[in-house]
Length: 163
Image 1: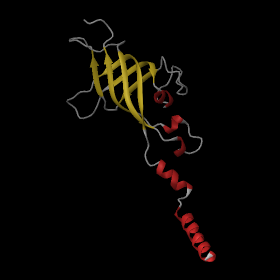
Image 2: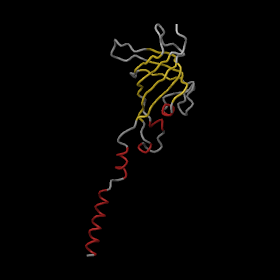
Image 3: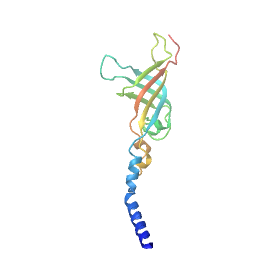
């Protein structure tokens, strides 16, 4: 009876070893989906070109002077400071431009015939895919793990006196 129990135990142990996935297979399940992180940049308007609804292509563009940005935006490398450096979290005073990316333009607190002008408050909202640290090759920076953001909405709030 003892030999029979040990033989069954040995077979079960061998079967369990074969059923366990390799280390790489366990990580691949974790890495199948790349999460998206919120991307928000706020500042003052420098220039704005609205999209022409009569054309198929999206021609809208906005340029702002950054006053603040959330963590994913500062770490993405998309915002360059005045010296052109993209590292670090010191983004205040940097210029940030969005063009070629279709987004929804929202104008708040504007009364006709007032239009957006330099100095109005702007918030740029989007999402960016960021590869998980354990799924990226060793030594990859956060900047390299964050994809180019998908800008979804630009909100311009009237900050000057109405005309």
